Image: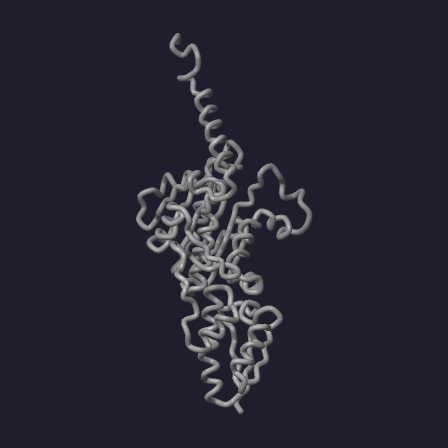
Length: 329
């Protein structure tokens, strides 16, 4: 009898093994001549050499499916072991990757699709648009896909720690406790796309890093997809510092919303400044999301439209050329 250990390198062990090891129990049935023991991401198999070779081949296919689709139903296990095609369903249009429980994550609007296309053609992308337009979610999906496909070795997500009306010093806890609430939207997106066990592993081993913008100073970020969210709240010096962190074999996506700038009135938004300077530079693309891209509750689009109308009204009321009596001057 021979012994072999299969290590799950790409698939989440919980997804692969199933609830209460249900998939391992099924594998014991379809491979009756092999004794299996699963612990964490390791599956120990004992049997004769020929059976182990077949088992190893099927395990490779099963892990590939589990890693790609984030699920492994019993019917799929049986199909793969029998040599049948594991999934005959057509893939959704504009698929980026499969999220938790096999949920397809797609580029649903023309501007989201443009971001996906530009990601393949450029190393630096600016994605501007209103809340709910999917710019950050699509960017993170692209980063996770690149990581799963081994195009990069890590994902780095950052936000400036500029608070909408609150002061970090008054919040309880250490620096991580103070900062994490501002980074929560990034965690939320990752939790949609990566199974919990695998996400925890990625965070603990720093394959995925989530940190405030100030922590980026002095680093060179290579072999990574780097995303700066809420970039409208950077100063001109901060965004220049961040943009020059780009290393070899890396891609950078900058997202922001020019209508939600929380900087003091005396400071210029680094995002708007950088976009003005860098337009026309080869290798950099600009995607302008708008209210048509909003895919949250239908009221969100109406709220954005109402604020746009109000802002336009205020601009006109403050314009001296439109005020009463201008013609008398």
